[in-house]
Length: 402
Image (cartoon, rainbow, N blue to C red):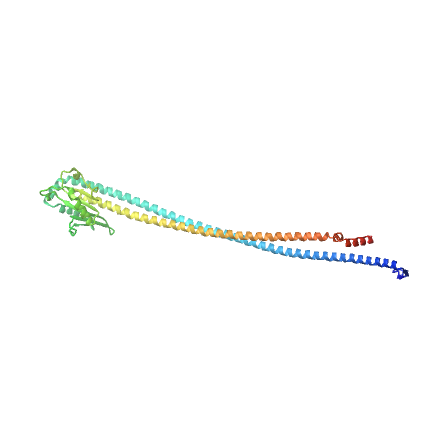
C-alpha cells in the first residue's frame, strides 16, 4: 500500500500498488505532454522571432544594396548625360568650325574666281585694243603696199645704180629704226660655218628676244650668164637660218621678174622650208612690221597664258588643300564618333549588369517572402506529419486539454 496526500485538502489516503502505478503514469504523461507542448511553443516562437529578424536583416541589406545600386545607376546615367552633352558640344563646335572653314574657303574661291574673271576681262580688253592697233597698222601697211606698188617702176629704176642690200638697209633705217631703236639689223659677217646670209634682224621685249629673221637679198642685176630661180636659194637660206638660230627666213628677190606668184605679194613657202617667205623689195618693210606685231602678240599671249596657268595652279593647290582638310576632319570626326559609340556600348553593358543585379535582389525578396509565408503556415499538424509517436502525443494532449 502507498500513502498519498491530497494536494487540495491535505488529507492522507492509501492506495494499492496498482492504483499508485496508474496515478504515477498519469502524472508523468501529463507533465511530459505539458513540457512537450511548452517546448514546441517556445521553439516555434524562437524560430518565428529568428525568421523575423533574418527577414528584417535581409530586407535591410537588400534595401541598402538596392539604394547603393540605384545611386550607382543614377551616377552612371548622369555620366552618360554628361558625355552626351560633351559629345553634342564637340559635334556642334566641330560642325561650326568646319562650316566656318568651308565658308572661308568658298569666299576665297569666289575671290579667286572674281580675280580670274577680272584678269580675263582685262586680257580681253587688251586683246581688243591690240586687235584694233594691229588692224590699224595693217591698214597702214596695206597703204604702204599700195604706195610701193605705185612706186614699183621708179624703185626698180632706182636700184639699177645701187645694190639691193643697200636699198633694204636704207629702208629699215629710215622707216623702222625710229620705232625700234634697240633692234638689231646688221650684215651677217659670220662665215665660220662655211656659209652666211645677208642680214640678220633681232628685237627684244623686256629683255626677252621675241623675233629673229635671216635675210637673203637676190638682185637680177647680179646674175650674168645663167638665170636663177628663187627656189635655188631656199636650201641655203634655211641652212643659214638654222645655223644662226633665227626664227624666220626671208628671201628678198628680184629674180623671176615675170612670175605672177612672186609679183602678187608675200609668198609663204613654209610647206617646203619652215617659216620661210619670199618677197619683192617693196614688201620688205610691211613683212617685218607684220612679223614683229604677230610675234609681239604671241609673246603677250604666252605671258597671259603663264599668268593664267599660275592662277589655275594656285586654285588647284587650294582645292587640294581644301580636300585634304575635309579628309582629315572627316577622319577625326569618324574616330570621335566610333569612340562615342564604344562608350555608349559600355554604358549599356553596365546598365544591363545593374539590371541583372536588381532582378537577382528582387528574386531574393520573393524567396524571403515565400520563406516567411512558409513560417506563418507552420503548424503542429505539419510538424508531426510522418511522425506517429509525436502525432499520438499531441493528439492525447489535445484530448486531455479538451
